[in-house]
Length: 506
Image 1 (cartoon, helix red, strand yellow):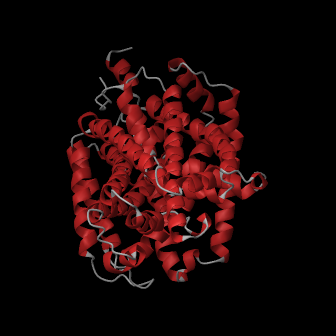
Image 2 (tube, one colour):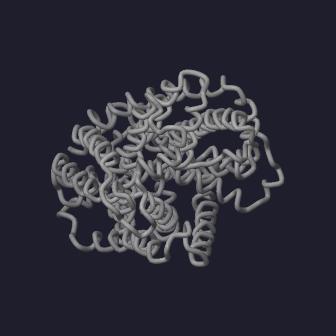
Image 3 (cartoon, rainbow, N blue to C red):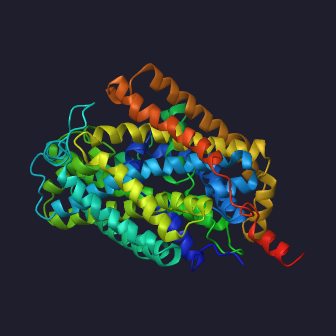
């Protein structure tokens, strides 16, 4: 019998997949990316990217995890030992991301508390980089920042408890609570935002199409980039999650549900964010493009300023907004950590509880560097390089290995079709054979060209080298070393049903 843990229900799996996909980037990245790349016109390449890269890759990873019943390294090793290293590479990427992602979730927790009395004062940006993060000059680590460190400890305790309780009683239960709560709370945020004066101006700016941008190649690259990074594909999460599904599980339809749920939330986020930005622009008497931003600045500087200027319910709006960031962040964080917990369990045959203690402990220690005065600068560099040269390239390597080297696409399609109502055909094959690898290759070339001709973010070259290039390359080296440093225990690479058949003498 197979001892692998399982989701309690298919709904639990889908909610967990949605929880992983819906993260901080949905709220603070997508609205700005859409606005910068043609507004309403951006939705055409975005939808095309979802249907030709996002969902096809989701289906492929769901099917790999379900068919081969293991973490990313084990699933790929069962496919072929030659590609096991890609799975460990993906796990190294997840480990790196988890070490800084947890810090941002800690910021959100802090700011939910700060919202009670607008503790950030009249100049939120100065408060963020000065009093709160105490940002040091680039290249300097500085000392530990207590206001970041203690919330960080709280987030790690929450994540540890959820993961320690396991797949069904921990991860699934948490997502059953957190995802509906996130949707309800964010709907309240949006409803409040659209009632603000100037909200219509903001929404019009968000949806107004600039059709002159539709033939711009950078717009299409931006659409594929957003889809790829938003759906948690390419760094072991979806393979790991789908390995916990029962043998008879709908795969294709689940991928469509998760993909469209993620995109729907991004659209909702765009409405809420730009309603608030429209209000801010009107209050300050400036054009909307002067207040548009994304990322850390949008969430922790622009939104606090919006909260300051609101005519009423300031504290409630702030608490709701940052609670949403916390919920979106914690569900994604859990999924990221689960990838390497599962990998350690499979490779080293340790108990789940021991794997959780080891993995969370190591990641927690590494995350402390982001709680220093130099943490924001390091986070910015690591995030850019591990995404551009980690997630995207590992995803490309996975596709090339599965589709072109091992030629497993037909086997995976047959497995998915045997279980799913929506049958895969030439559309799926063409997307994974040609469209997705081509786009990811173009993205890689453009990123390399940009980073070799200029220093990312204007940081010192050596800072980018140590926390950018070295981290990204180190993840690859880790993957190769871990694939060969220890052999799998005898019979582990056999599929559970094959072991059972051998045991019964068939």
